[in-house]
Image 1 (cartoon, rainbow, N blue to C red):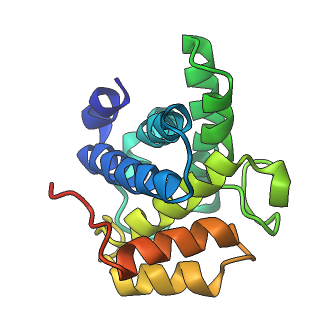
Image 2 (cartoon, one colour):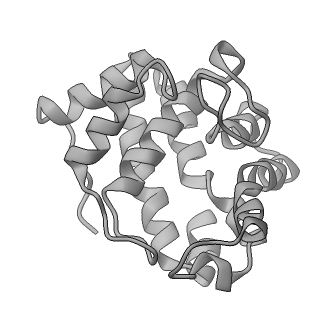
Image 3 (cartoon, helix red, strand yellow):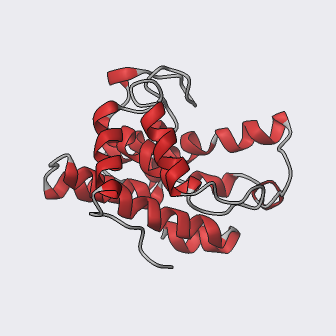
Length: 184
């Protein structure tokens, strides 16, 4: 559902969701999550940007810097996405994961400035998968920095922005050749 909705507004977002979901699932397995919990992480990753439908298409496709007002609209997508999936009746943890996927361990994230263990583990996995996927894909406003830069970001900010266990698991998957993003 989310893929079809996002494809109507922005095809690159649906591909981002698929790739982030593949990585989030691999990290959950690396952390030895059981099948049901792993499936929940994957489902949340597939739906994590559903709140982007509340952002005007011209803002999503803008090639230059966003204005403060536009940035505020984009920053609401985790909250809006959580509300959407909650209304549909998904399991209670799924809206929470979506709402918290831009929160950061040090409290600098959004929409609520949660920190540490106040952020559910599944959202901490999604946060890392989302950043790594975003940095390995071109965006309208910038070319992809690439996998090396993404892994350096995760490693350098582990324990600050990103959960240390999750960051270590993600980096190990790539460095040990046990994960590669699926082809488009």
